[in-house]
Length: 443
Image (cartoon, rainbow, N blue to C red; front, side):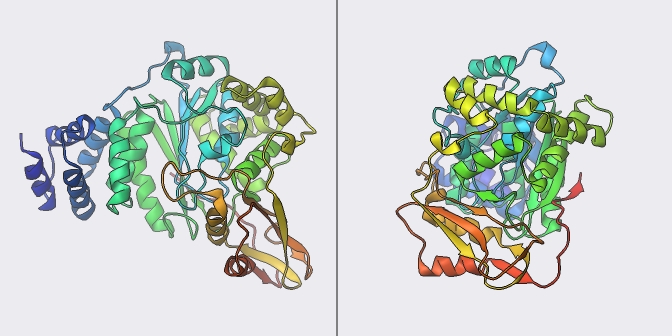
């Protein structure tokens, strides 16, 4: 077997690793017998020279088995499902989708992440609910799935330890944006959940990691191949990420919008993503015979109240007091009796008469991030109350002076430059614009 320096040289020179060589690298990372500088050098060599599909499959499998791989009762064999999103602005899909899938008979062991840079993290949103505990052991996860059908938790110490090490070094060595390493990271964590089916929401556009459809498609196709190679039925959706999903951005505000959606008062674009992704998973597990039926079942779970009941049960199972969970789930919730409200709110006014043609989601997210809604480094605290609400819809006609955005902020007020950025984030026109469809392709 080659030494670590020899392995680095082999990849640096553009050669292909054998399965044993990939295994040796991942094992060295997991057991910490490799120096940090060597790990960084290997990641840079992979970034520069790439990997063939067989290497990516082996890398993903070895990362997946570097720690605990979850096991489930035999009767759940064809019901284990999850979804992964590449990140967006106002992306609260998981909060609605997980309980809807549970209401349709699936088991959803959703292991999620925290927000970094401008994209919000599912765990941060849920932690704005007092008492919600995202830290659950494997045994606790099994109990919650048995009683509720879904849970949304953080990665345990025992799951995919190799990924935790590599992810931190990728961040420090500017190798985050490498397709083989992205595929290995995402699919190894989902593989450790021992899933039946996985659906990926790969976003493209100005507020996404990938700005154009072709780049996003390349990633989606690789993720699908890698997932299927591990024996997980894997599908993907390519969806646009230019403006906000729904109307709210920011942790507490997105929880409120998710609850409103579960109470049949949510935005159409959020429901479009939830029903498409959920419908695909129901189809892949064989619970429905076609996608339209899958979409309908997910929609019925949301509009009929079954998904809301599951969300309430999940909150209680993950540490939220029964009274708090009931209050948030009731028809006439006073959300701010439970969730933190920002000290200040400010409405931005439409600059002219006209039709709202566009709102730049990236600008909105970047300003909110600097006001405390996000973090730059893993482990940094965030302010759950900071956020913004869109008060208008795309295509809506407004008059000059009408409020179009409500900013929620704390002691750190927006600067003059940030206010200018926000004011320039809205595009007004004279015509009615076009109907917005988020889902562009299904793979």
